[in-house]
Image (cartoon, rainbow, N blue to C red; front, side, top):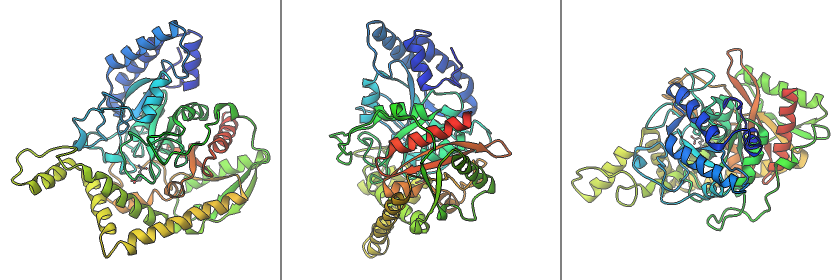
Length: 479
Ligand code: GLN
């Protein structure tokens, strides 16, 4: 069998189908690889070899009996905020340290239906709040390209596992960049589907009007395979749209010829690391050389995106996290002196610093007297940002931008300065605010050997288009 480090989802499925290896052999190789590497990377919060191999043995039996479900026997790592019945789901928080999921999230049920093996729970920033995975209550995940650097976040565990040879593919979530940015820091593919494309049912909510689940993989083809399984209308999530799910993999054809690529000028300003800008512009240039037309576009409200995002996301988070009160949900303080004390102490002990900061911010922007000035204004500005994108997509098919202004930085370098960390989300949060889709894929590396990601954005429900473009770019890179 090919090394787990390079084995793709497509390759694993092919090998299983052709009986080159069994699911037990495949999953044993994965477990061995995690055992070997996770001491350094710390990508997983939990990985139970027995549970994995039991599922693998069952899928081998099913295959022998003629079952040919689309993901039968292939392990998929899961970010630790997606509920999988019976499994822990800590959200990297003390609040849920002892919680086991009572039901399957829709995405988990879909993976189960497709025959996938649940491979382990990946680390993340607590409740998905952060950009470096340093906000996990339990451990700091490291970047497989340089163990002194962060893997990005909040889906840093999934990205490090995929890029570091500890997973074939993984699920992440993206509220303001948490799939795309860690994918770019670690050098894998990460896709945020359009809002409403994938169900959020059973996915612990951070900011419900922005959250989406998506694939984190080694190749664009793998992202296409996994997205097809995840996407679609769900009666449990009223924000999913009843739009047919295309066979994304079958559409991965064609090159760059005739494609109109927009370069938003607001994304190419001073302030980015020159090595990042150079790698991205080189990628754009190679698309032009391969026959794409490059057009300049403007997204004039980009400058407000960070402020709008950090008002809306924290407002929604403060409401979503109100349920962790030590009574209905979450950690309960040992010996409170009163009911008020029970709430206050349980929350004080259960939440980490960054989560508390966001709850305070969010409560403030929603409080009477400030609501209109902050929350109301941010909603209006969000509409303007969304309209910017609608107009831009009248002039081009896709947009190409950097994913993050910097490559991965050293552990500890940004964690003491929350504002600095927030500003690093400038290129990713607009897509969530606008509800559109985006993908990050590797386009080069710095002189220090750290990966640089290229972001391709498409209109809402334009997943086919960005996957096709990303695939064409990936093929050019490989050639
Ligand atoms: N870094 C952003 C934040 O901290 C995005 C997080 C995410 O997408 N979950 O909110």
